[in-house]
Amino acid sequence: ASTVIYQDIATTPGATYEVKYRFAARPNTPASDNRVEMSWGGVVENDTGNLAGAAGPIVWNLVSDTVVATTTTTRLAFTDQGTANSMGSFVDDFSLVKIACTPRVSP
Image (cartoon, rainbow, N blue to C red; front, side, top):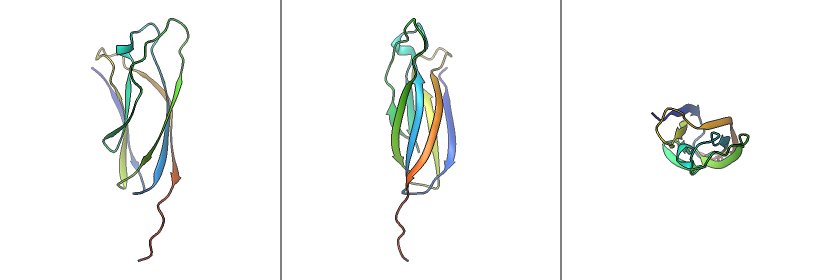
């Protein structure tokens, strides 16, 4: 089966966040085995696409995206979209940083 890694995060509605993570193809595997989808609040924001794993060393690719929170709790999820063979995909070095807040509106 394929896997999902997620965390529910306290967020500020309207605030912008930067999500970064690293993705790598498993060595000696076909492209159909290596693909990760990143979703924010149930919406797919990024898809690594299929990537074949070469015979050499693991090559980590930095993936970065900006997202906007719409609620006070947002689920950040990484879903393996490769072949459902229980091997999973390589993801590491996750980072989430608030980069812009919403302007305050006077009551």
